Length: 522
Image 1 (cartoon, one colour):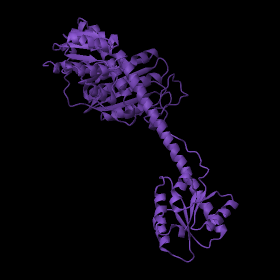
Image 2 (cartoon, rainbow, N blue to C red; image 1 turned 45 degrees about the vertical axis):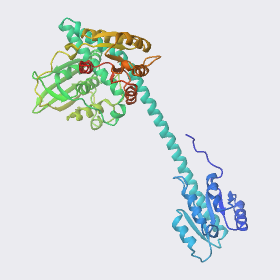
Image 3 (cartoon, one colour; image 1 turned 120 degrees about the vertical axis):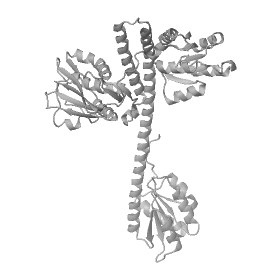
Image 4 (cartoon, one colour; image 1 turned 90 degrees about the vertical axis):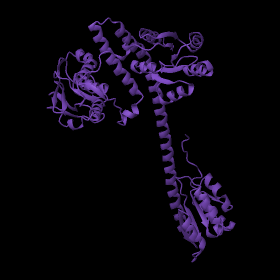
C-alpha cells in the first residue's frame, strides 16, 4: 500500500468568482502573504482542482447561482470519507438569497463571509480554514498508516497460517509410521503384559502429540478461548497416568520425588482425556520447574459428594501473596529473580483454568508465601455414567472385510507400515511411492480403495485423483486422501479433485476401519 506523501497543493486556496477582476485581486492579496492560490475558470472544473489538491474553496455567491450550486455539491459529495473541504462563501451585503439558503442546507462545511470583507478578516478566516484542512490531511495520513499496519498484520497472519500448516504436515508425516508401528506391535506382541503396557503408554502419548499438532491449526481459536472439547466418559486414574508419563522425565531430571494418592474406586468424569491430561501435566511440570533439586510433589484425589477434588502440592519457591490474585492471568509469571532454572511464556496456568472451567470445574491456588511451596486444587464434577470400562481390545484387532487397497505415499516408512498393518488385518495391499507408479499399478491390480497422499513431489495427489476420475472404468473407485494437509482449503481441493474422503495423518485406525467396513458391500 502506498504511504501518504504531503501534496504541495494541499494548502492552496481555490478561488471561484464570476469576474476575472475579483479573482485577480483576491489572488494578489494571498500572494502578498505567501498563501498558495489557484483561480478556477468555472464551477465545472472545481472537482478537478480538488483532486489536484485544495486547502479550501473561496466561492462568490454569484458564481454558483442557478445550477452552479448543484455542480459544487456534486464535487464535494465525491470526496473520500476523510475529507470535508471548507467552503468560504462570499455573499452580497444585506442579502439572504435563495442561493445562500440552499448552500447552507446542502453544503456540510460552509462559512459565510458578507461583503465587503476586510482583508484582515478574509485572511484570518482563510488561515483558520487551512489549519482545519491540515488536520484532515493528518487524519488521512493516520488512516493510511492504519491501513498499512492492518495489511501488514493480515499478511503476517497469513504467513503464520502457512507456517503452521506446513509444520503440522511435517510433524504428521513421522507420526504416521510411529502410530502404524504401534498397532503392528499390538497385533504381533504375543500378549506379553510388559509389551502391552508399553504399547498402551506409547499410544496415549502419540494421541496427545496428534492432538497438539491439530492445535497448531487452531491457534487463533485457542487465543479466543474457543478450544473444542471431545468429551467422553473417562477414568480419572487413566488421565493422571497419562499426565505423569508426560511429566516424569522433567520430574526425574530434577531429582524430585512424586507421591500419588488415588482412591481405589473408579472416578469417572465426562471430559476430554487429552485436555484433562494436559491440565495435570501442566501443573506437574510447573511444580518440577519452580522447585530446587530434590523437592517433593504430592498428587492426591478424593471424592467429595458428586465431585472429585484433585490437589497438586509441592515444596517449591511458592507464590507471593500479591501474586496469588493474578496467577491465572495470561503472561503472569512469578518473580524471575527466584531460583527456578526454567521459565515460560506465562500462558500455562491460564490455559489450565480455561480447560478446567470448560469441564464445569474450578481451580484455586494456595501458598503461604515465598519458599513455602504451593498447592493447586481442582474440583471437577463426576459423571453420572457407570464405572464400566470400555472394551480392552482395540478396534484395529477386530479385523476388516476383504478389500484390495492401494497405498500411495512418497514417505516409504509411512506407506510400508500402513501396508503391513492393513495386511495383518486381512486386507490385500499394494504400495506405490509416486503418482505415475500408482496409475500404472491401478490398471493391473484393480483395487477397490486407494489411500492416496496429497503432498507428493512431481505429480501430487490432486493430479493423480483427477486422472483417475477421467477414466470411466475407475469412476466407482473409492479415493481416500491420507495426508498431513488438513486446512479447509485442502479439504475443498481434495473434494474438487474427486476424493471421497479426507483423513489426516497419522491415520486413526478406528476412523479408517469404520470407512473400510462401510465399503464392504461395494
